[in-house]
Length: 582
Image (cartoon, rainbow, N blue to C red; front, top):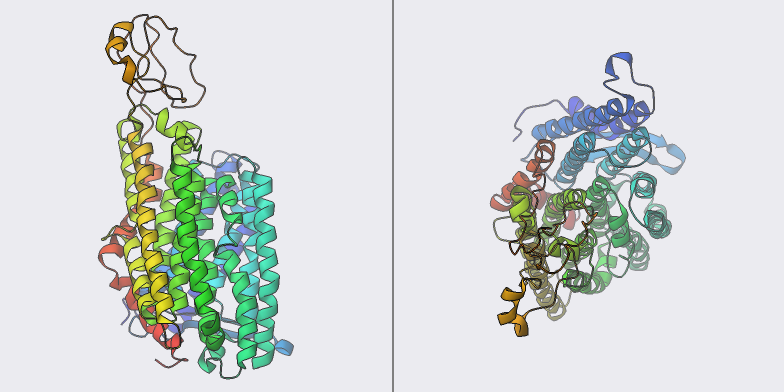
């Protein structure tokens, strides 16, 4: 069934345009704007160009999804197959199925929303020309990763995103951006070199680099020892990008230093490339090798779940001076642990859960980074102690819509039933309860129990964040008038270290005004015992609402109607795990 009947040639053109269009747009962004499109100034013109190109790609992706044959999601559609390097039998082979289509649409959507957000709030840094060009190159590489069906093309697309992300962090990032960018590029390049060796091993030993042919062969043309080596090499490169514990240490630094849109794209899109490689390449091409390493992959996954949650709890506690962006980054380590656990089960239930969790994480964590960026813009900091102690009435009282959205994203991230985050984690745990034949059930049920415990830790730190940032600290005022202070002096708590006490004593001079945007200032009138009302912050702006509303709506839609996504992925996963047989 197709919503609109579109000819195969048009579908081929749409997919080719989706992959190549952003690359052409990046080249055009570096050229002078035509006279009729200059706008108020060159910076505005190039930012508008970014919105136009990413918008056109998003429209093409939606039309492609509408024209997709939903009755046969396991069949590769919109395929293009052209010989590129005959000597190596490398082909320009493009196509989509129920596994890659949702990731393609998610990438196009998040990149468009980032371009729209940047048009109204450009990141501080060098020329917007370079910024727009880098975002478009990043989009092209990511879309190509989900669309190509040749191992060497997959590697080229996989690597194509590294340089743009490096410069986005290094040139438009915040504190410690150079160290974070270097750490990101070194980790990912090292993993990619090892992955290339594994891809070459598979291609040379099997006689083809075609991913469809390799999946259909289902490892029958590769010995068990070759499969084990291939899984170890390719899996290492994919695990770095995912990121899997203990190869995750580049991620918190990169997220903390990256600009808002860089964090959104890194969490919402780039991390999915690693898990997609596990599903698209390793599961069907080297099933025996995956079966050998599946228990170890699951063990690393559940350690990552617990470790990420404990790191978030440590950052969220009072006095830890935890950065909210860094906390969300560590939460990604835990969430991607669920994705890896689902893949390690090697069952349709677990892999479907992993793919669902992939999409849910992209929507929810993308929204979280947008919101944290907005909070940081308003307060001038993402330090949790400052946000909790210096906000007066906190977000609920000072920017209620922004506070409500942050609370919504937090409860979605902890897996509240009815929202997108719930289904992926639940299916992953069900898959671990009954793993594939040949895998140890007691071991995987232990992993399931540890993963379930991780969901409780996730709920704990997310609720702490909501309480502290959205509601503020609820300590009793320490500075009061002498008359008011006398009866309660023995039980009076210590004054908070952050600026902005609710009351100022009559005999104590008012503290100097804080330079931090949005902090509460004490009253200066001698003898005043009433707290000065917390100054209001700018609530959600129209351009912010435009960028965030689609993510909220899709999070609710996927949570209430999971069959929309599972109906696409399940037939394709069944075919992938059965050696190309539907």
